[in-house]
Image (cartoon, rainbow, N blue to C red; front, side, top):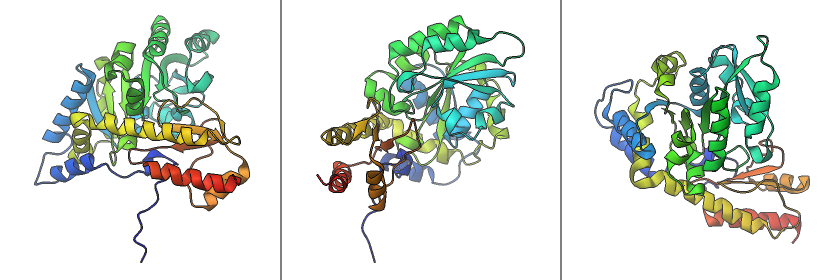
Length: 348
């Protein structure tokens, strides 16, 4: 019988298991009975800890996954005749199967270009002023991804510039924070500096990619938008009856800054991977590495060869090339083995 540990891959941080702290909190929550539907002590504790993280009062709701978090949050900001402005590579456009439009009863997603996966203030203004007649879906919200789908990170100043432009045009700001932890760790700032202090109205705070088994937090800094959001969650099939098993792992993650340590580790592993790939002349880097993803262009035979050696990584995310994603549990030896196989294939 083969008892070797399964290989850690570079396809997605979703591939990683549950981190020990989240697992321990989940096991601790699995003691006796507790009220359902979020009326339990674990959910209250997790909510309070998220408020402490952001240093402000905010409304917090836990849902099963990022698609639901983004789609329900955006539906709270828009009517069906509105539109959402986002980057052309945004997850809500490319990887949500139309869920934002579905949950908002038809709100249109309008796309903007931008270098390195980032929305630019000038593009927002162009989209809003492109047409103002009643036949055009009225722009209502700007959706930002932090860190972006191309592995880059918005700085506080970039976010404030987007906020100033959005505010002047009457737009709300939604942040898809599936990898928000990686952005905070990369920038070395406090979470408030790149959320409510930079004009973000609602954040979809990702836990799954950071070491939790399932569950994202929808964090409303604009409490007006949170009105009756609990009904949206229920109608959307996102109200967990045993909510403590969604919220308890957050307690384990948020305690003593565990979430940031794991995000920082994932970022460092991506930095290490980048450093090991730089000596290869056949490897072309596509975007700046600022969080836990490295985007490279490789010759097709090399890609096929790596897949043939059992390595899993995506080639359809972003603007082509290969996305190599590091996770909370990625180890230097994983990087070394991948690079060794790459080197063998390149005959170097």
